[in-house]
Length: 132
Image (cartoon, rainbow, N blue to C red; front, side):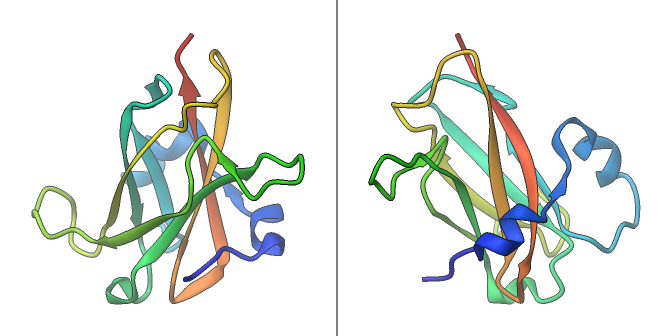
């Protein structure tokens, strides 16, 4: 399974609240989004990643390691991103559906990292707020 290298996460591009504005440009860098932007633990969220050089190679999304002698991640686990087959998103958009982990801290803003399989070292970051 594809994993995002730790060095890529450390140097990723922060998109956070600027992602909607960035989506309106011809930016060649990957653009990540989480929808909805605020979700309760256990809620389903849709992850999207645009501008991958080779979207047919898929992508990956993951939350940060929790630590404490575990490989668990928050607010999401490792999630595969696949090319959109619904036509709902622009061509070449990768999409994944996952749930916010039950142990995500209420009232916090958590980071989600995404990368194209064609360039896993170019990770991007977005955020999701965990509802109180």
